[in-house]
Image (cartoon, rainbow, N blue to C red; front, side):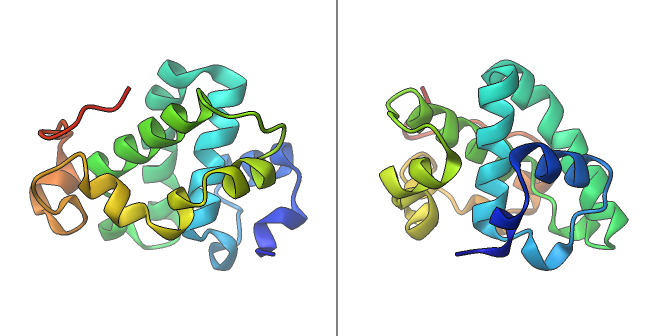
Length: 137
């Protein structure tokens, strides 16, 4: 089990917003959890407004500003939202178990929406590029 589970959803969100979250626990799965928390609490539209700015603040606070990717951030939120619409889970742990492809095959999943590699695109880092193969729900 990943270390981010040691924090409640509220603790996790607050430490992240306050830029106090231990970078060592902010894994790919923790990023997905952040989207899951926000969508559940505030809805997809609000999550799409809040998370990008908060994530930019967080990565800047830990000296990793160059790691931020606008397109990837939005795509991840939309992917989590799409799976949440189909979910029967009551917790993030149940959710990620229900949809393991978000954790284990994320690049392939995102790649089914884009004809180019958004993970290594300089343009995708700085501007929002919409999917050109398959839109997110």
